[in-house]
Length: 425
Image 1 (cartoon, rainbow, N blue to C red):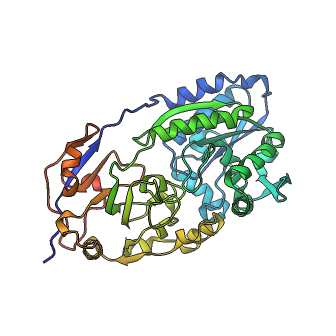
Image 2: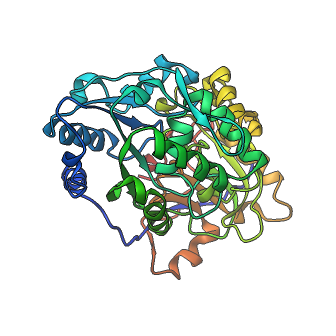
Image 3: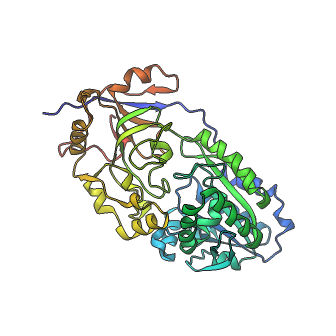
């Protein structure tokens, strides 16, 4: 009979900044831009919405719609999500609906199409694509979350600037931009394309959202187009400060209940798991240093898109049955991260995965294996970890033990419950 580590539940004590009235914050922030000076009654305004599971995104978009309608404009929503949703208009419309963004809930039309207009040619020699409906609108409002990118590092990572490329460029643009990034750099291409989009595509404002450690809205900022780059640099610093982390330097097994495109562009945030530069281990200076990752399921909202699964070493066999191979491969190939679509070793039960890990951690006694079990990479405020961390957790002011030590909670089939928050009750 195998020996397993005992486990306990931990809570991280964050200093949280939070926006309680998101709609009010969006409205007041936009009011400060005096958009009524530029928008005439009857003007059409396209509002971009991406595929990420951004906290309160339906509330934020609804507030943008109402603000524009109060100015006499005729706003509409366009999906701005590159190749997601299988690279189809229907798939992208379904993603929006999953976030509660429909014509009925927003009080305005949803115009979904994969058709683009070639605006011009970038200095680097490739065509710049822009969503057809957004191009035809009188104005465009770009809305996105500002956060660290899962693959690129710089003063500009994921936010308003990236939305104007990968999002509003649709599948046609995303394919070209990702190829251009391989030859140049993310920073160069994002600035090159954004310059042309801001100059030629009628962008009138941006609404940037920053999330806190509890996966909620921490900051709202409406931004003038001429200030996109400078303001995004400032907001990225804030986003990094608020980003949740796994509070240990070394982990033998990181078990993740769910990955998905609504969680991260890479399915699981590489900034959180310490694999931003290498699929299967931390690079120098990265933490946590995770030896093995095991994925236990996909989110419903990811619609079978298992991008990022290839960064794990193990998964439950049910995950492989949940994968939509076509959608996953399209997304990973378009994004230039082919290995993210690969399939890890799969086992029917959690017990089988743990048993293999116990054999693969050198001379470490099984009871001393460093195990961390989280819901997803956005939700790490509370998690389960093994007894190897007991003394370390007790020594820290930012961590709180909230359960006794327990045996690993296998059921009769050798599995854990599907949600870590329901374990050790």
